[in-house]
Amino acid sequence: MLELKFEDKVKVWRDLRDTLEVHPTPLQELMSFIKTLPVSSRKSSPFDPKSKIQPWHLLEHSSFTEYEIAQLCAYTLQLTDRFSQSKVEIHISTDIKEDESMFLVFLDGSIVLGYKNEVIDVNQLPKTVVSQKIYVMPPLN
Image (tube, rainbow, N blue to C red):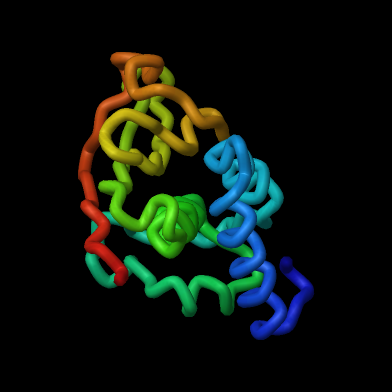
């Protein structure tokens, strides 16, 4: 997606959302897509409310911070009919054992996307992963 024009990026994103509507394992399909995104060395402060970017502006980037990837994942879910009524949250978290920061997307409080780049049940999340801040994504439609 890196080398595409903005309009083409929008089409790729739309095609992904269309695929998620009918795919037998949509969350795994979303994570497969997310894993292909180029990760930026830029740093953003997810604790700053201004660091939350609207979905269309995210697509303008040629690479993404880890927080932006979590936002794109959350927006993608929200903009599908299949998940539009789901509760979507971004958890800015720390694994206190590994001293590792992460940005996790919680779906309906029971599914976690992004832990070790996978989709897991919330009960599989290690107890050492502590949410520092939770952004409840407001409905988009």
